[in-house]
Length: 357
Image 1 (cartoon, rainbow, N blue to C red):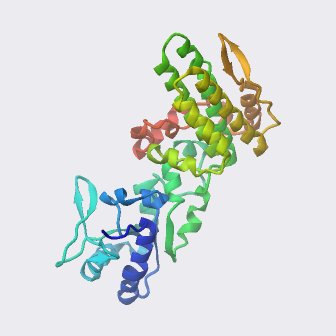
Image 2 (image 1 turned 60 degrees about the vertical axis):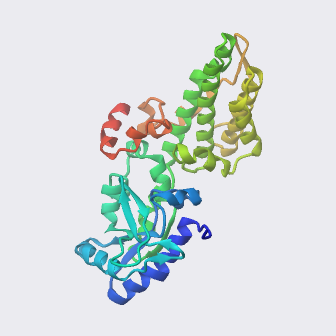
Image 3 (image 1 turned 45 degrees about the vertical axis):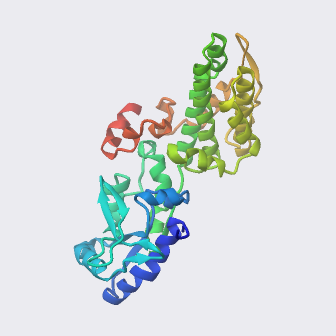
């Protein structure tokens, strides 16, 4: 069995050793950018041998200037006729099966490489974000972007950058501060609605309901950790993996794990409150508002919670004078993992803005 190579490394060497020499030979004057960004576990560095089953392998995006878009087909023909059949033991030829690309080894004929050739604006507007102008983004633009897509387009690597694509993407590096504050306030608001239910559900014998509420709050605390660290969170498959690599205290990771895996209400409630307190510590360390004293209180009905209304109000004050002060604290749609059909479907972005307005 061949040794597994991380997809990003495989793609970079494929470009440098296979595609680049051909471009230098047949199109010496062509100016372009090339790299691997956007979708894929390989872009995020989370790929393993299992990832190789589809949409993975020696692959690259080739970005052209608008005036060179007419060269797309001839570039595709050139690569098909000249690329090798394999690179580092992996097939360069791909087949489309049920809408997904799979490596398909061949020993004769033309190669069908996984190389998408398009202009920068086509990639951003038509393929990935729904717009190519990244200089005048509104608050609503940010709230309706897929956070996973923002992560993908700012991850991976640009191998060659004649067109200054990395600089064009720089405005997307992370949320503007007022959007980050809005998302922080939203997550605390959503937590505050349900935190007493962890105990209440268990009290009436609904251990499943209690565990589900605990899980939802844990998810929000993790999202807050990403926001305090100024890191985009990926979608569900890699959410926990990315959190495990986040620069937060191991104590927080431990508390969340114990909370969501606890069978008894005492452990579940104690560990969840401990996790909340640790995330509030992150809030205080960030200096976003004045110091907030995270006191564990008796909600009544024997429930332990941390009242965060003053913390939310303090963030509201920070948002005064911005366009976000009038919006309900519902966060973004991509903060709900199983709403992928909404937050990852570009045609719905404009309609999604109506919810806030």
